[in-house]
Image (cartoon, rainbow, N blue to C red; front, side, top):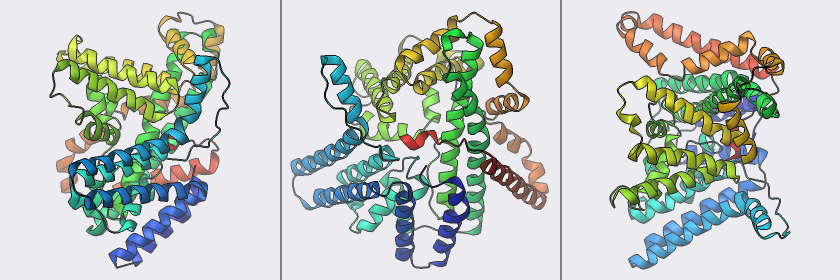
Length: 472
């Protein structure tokens, strides 16, 4: 983690927020936020902060070059060179060891495997850098003459290390023209606390159980144990990543920026196709905008459309990490999307609960591979989930040990709130809230304070606090 949670929560964030409020000139405020973001990243990655600055500088330079040169061919050449440079950075720092390891295994040789430490959040800020230069190529009016504004876009700390991925065409206007008022600040703080609660209470609590299961020799246990670990991990990664996205969106709102939603209750979907309209929306939107549509999208026939989808999901898997488990995870989702488009009539099913149950099963099964250290362990886990018809003393003892009252509440609550129950309750009580608006406001902020208190207690008493998406 770049900052310890306590330092971030009680020192860095409030000091940065207050400092930003005290600065009136927009250029000075932008400079202050850029400096704060670089300090934030340099606290845990003192060397790689220069890599991020260099990435911003190179793409800024290519953007200026694309605008300056004449002729579409030269502009396209500069764009291709910019993308190659960005992908080369990812290739060296994220995939070099994986590539050499597989070459050694394939050809029976012993090339030295490079041991390069992975810069935190490199996939996020590299994709944002590519977004800038591609948007400039498409519309020269988006070219930014001020390098510091490009650096702020790429380094802005709320979404720097775990997303959501913000595209240049979404935020360009906000860098110079953004409005901030008490309502946005209050809503941003509430959103931040909500995300913190999701992360510290749900994700951390469920993650402990998932880690215990995935550390087992799962073949010696039955399907109940395997499903417990798989369900807990599926809920953990949802509350971990959506929690961080909520925090990022909330923090951005506190500084006057507006980010797109990144999760919209994906486990309430009734197909895998719908799941990806709700899960990690910023990543799927990025691939749709910069890969799927340029490849032809759905405009060049059914076969080409399905091939484009498979390629996008292959790249989605590779984006997440240098391991065959991520590739397989991406391809599971890609294949299921293709099957739903062709031979699987799940989207036409009259009973939505069937589609929803199917989505849970596919998503949980795929996340087993995502979580597994090796593909072999992932397949063994999946096989146990569907064929491990045993409920012996060892399995029962393990289940009793893990399923205490607190964990059962977390699982039940995690499943319940993965559906839009809060939104439905708010809709049902709309007239009541309008009638007692002042009372509702007080209760809402009291509730936020309670959640914050529980989060502080969790931070004070827990050593287990991983952020899954920091490593991407």
